[in-house]
Length: 280
Ligand code: NAP
Image (cartoon, rainbow, N blue to C red; front, top):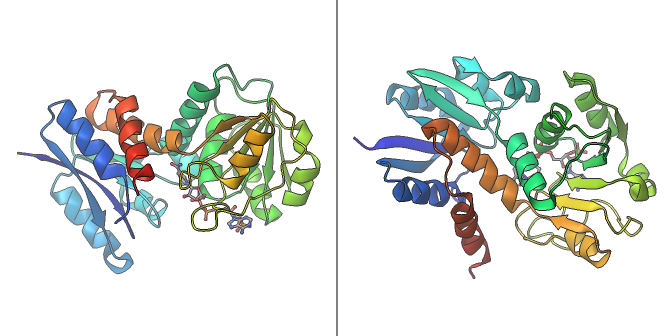
């Protein structure tokens, strides 16, 4: 019988995950299907229990359920527990185990893209929401953890909360977006994790990066558009630019590997996502 995989969220209609995962299943000759499963908030618990009864083999979780899903699982991986969110669930012999592959997907993509190590780097993370937390906690627990972090947020108290809740050692400070702009020439890596600059507000940028150093790495986890205003400005300043496609593809590839034990063809996954994002 065809094995069932999927993505649960609300809404999920525009997700690129089914395209990416179904192509990988087909290429590997795995008799499985990945579906976008939209669940209304009122019926969240009932619908998840139904999927578990059906013995769904694995699923991704997106907004708004990344936190609530944790109560419905048999086990949650320690890093996902620290991040406080699960985006990948694996059926391990009938036990449902939650992971967070967003942070690992992001870090793997950044390292693949820029090469080298982040050790001894000063990293500024713009934003203090769910994605910022996954990226910050994954970087802080990495074997080559950066030497310092600045969590820069419109609501600076939220940035401080991220630091206070971090269960690892890290040299981290919470600062405002204005303070980040003033210190921008001291950062080696700048990561935008806010939605500022996302379609349709493509003329917006979260901070002014006029004064960055040329060799700064500027990364934006937005992938629609592929080149945000922040990345356009970074390119003009001869910075290394990194967009959000790699994070999306690699969080999916890591989930696929957890479900099947097989590393999928990441290049093919990326081609599928890029084709869809660039088609008119
Ligand atoms: P979230 O938890 O809602 O956090 C949003 C963050 O953006 C908060 O820090 C918020 O600041 C800040 N923000 C929002 N509007 C702002 C504005 N106008 N000016 C300044 N700051 C603003 O969202 P999330 O889940 O972290 O997701 C954030 C973005 O990451 C989204 O665009 C999402 O599509 C993208 N994302 C991409 C991937 C990928 O695979 N590439 C994965 C996950 C998420 P306050 O705290 O002050 O409200």
